[in-house]
Length: 104
Image (cartoon, rainbow, N blue to C red):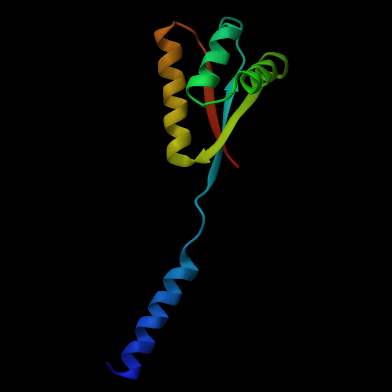
């Protein structure tokens, strides 16, 4: 292999490394409503977001008292999936629980 070809391959590899960046992160947030039970919110936090009971209760109280609670920070695709899971589980139980995501 010629020295020129090796240098060209090194330049391409260096350029690819420089252009790689971390994916954007998104906060997943539960929103308060007057109908969804606190127990169901804790259940969602434990099952969808894998929170321990004490942390799930703390987040549920944030939702209840402050109007919203952050469930976690994820890449876009994972955040979208978790929002969809929450909406599907809430609809199955006929709760109006809303979940949203916002860029970190």
